[in-house]
Length: 121
Figure 1 (tube, helix red, strand yellow):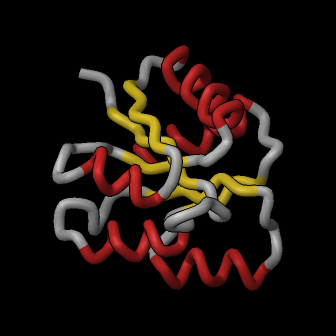
Figure 2: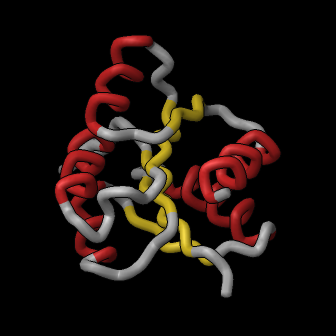
């Protein structure tokens, strides 16, 4: 059975590229438009990894990570930030919230798949 990855981004074009890249590599993908949407779509459903943007309306990536880490079902899944932000301060906030890794946009598809394979083992 293929692994399920949730991608959370308010940009439809980014979701499309990420989703296409992951599906081509054999993963199942669940898409969400922001943190709140992600939480409602997860609702206890098993996912193996979350890729989330940082800057989104309603609930940003840091807040989403905090909510996921507070939930026993998602406490230990890999969560990778996929964002245009590359400042050390933002990375530190992500790490403090519980982010597993960080990919800066724009990204190469091979780079994305490399990180996914690395964190999923």
